[in-house]
Image (cartoon, rainbow, N blue to C red):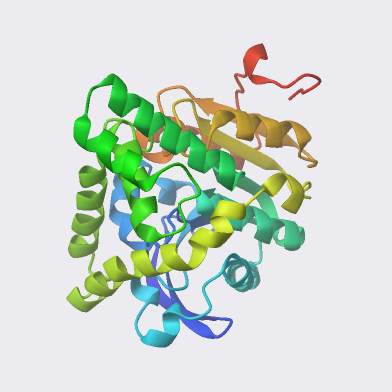
Length: 332
């Protein structure tokens, strides 16, 4: 690896951490913004290299955002967590990377990370070559109902009494506290609506194993990371529940590629299609991953890597969008 460095960066009022990795320093920069809320990214470096191999085609920047992962090293690091502060941090990091590498950035965000990335790109389009938004959080109300209705409906169909009981106990959305949110996510995950063929326990186990195997995290970092997930969720849930990107971000002045898993029950497809059709952008693509849920980068890694390579090379990605998925008057 020609570049492989763990670095502290000052973003706003906090010190945060990035790992920068690349085989060829002449490649363009790819900033990865993790899903969550509250999940780290630096721990994914080993797994992403094995399954995606992004370092062959990009200078890849793995970033632990405010209040999570290695960037959570003291009480003050979890203060001031909001969508606005995380967008501010993203813009600050984009400026730093653009100045350092003297090039436009490819910004790839996942779930809420895609939302944060989109808001940051809209603010500083001059720094961005393209935005890749995977499973982007668009409509908080629709997302909550999609996940809950899917989980409860599947539980009833499978006669899973425990799931039915727990989901009925939390009631319909909005789910305003971490416990309710966790119950909804747990059963949506167990029934395949988050990551294909992986349960909630499997997802949690993968997180812990990746943290423990990474040399970038001490045992204390691991403990703080796991606690930080809950704290960040608690801070952001009120904003996530009210999120409506259609009004908040009707235009983005950079090329946009939206990536959507066909079986995503967390970021519903109808909201993605609606937002895509209305979005004003210099160019836009909506790419469907037919065998994926909310995490195409994990469910279909080779196809995801190929897509990023085509975007890098300026090749129009293949878009498959059935007429039934397009609102009246919509087009791609």
